Image (spheres, rainbow, N blue to C red):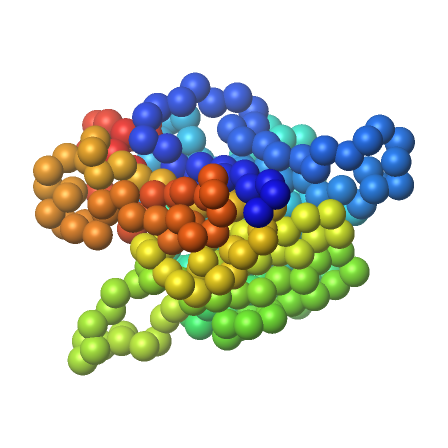
Length: 291
Ligand SMILES: [Zn+2]
């Protein structure tokens, strides 16, 4: 792989946050035609897990292609991070959720609601594993009270016209003039057979083909041949990292698979990303340690 950049979505140590915690833009020559179609990736939220952090938002990314916005995961803090990135929330119309854990979806409702508040009429499509459409329906119900209160302010668009959830299966899930998106099921979930929700939910990694490069988001995952295959010849890999070395002993017991394993090891000579499920960092140490 000629170029392979890993963006770490949750590092093992506290990092002072700049407006853009991580940013990667295609390096194209000034004033070339390619510059007009170059993709831009901003990692908005890099906090792993649901424990709040004073310096980091939960998982979320903004991919911009031809001035079109695509959100990948929508954890808590998404709206604020968009504002800090000077990105207009009203331009968000496509959202891709890797999995429906709350730290990847808690920012979804506020984004949709404030868009509706500001008279968005076009749909905001939310794509994700099975359960995503139900989650969006729940958001509609949650914000119905707000919508009814604001009816007198002239807001008439039905919430269900604006919020549209799509449950998708692995494979090609979306394509427009800017991007083609492919999903693969990763190994994040371990719901035992025989338990109430076995087989009901999935967790995905996404591959985004843009005009100038391929960007892969692993989502939360353990080692996964499907993710390795999905990431082949990618230019950028956005992954989540945890450290078994700095995790508390109790975390290691609860997350025995967090052993510095790597689904990306086979994906490129520099492509090493230590993967782990969400750990359980000490709330008093919530600025990035141990997650
Ligand atoms: Zn998760």
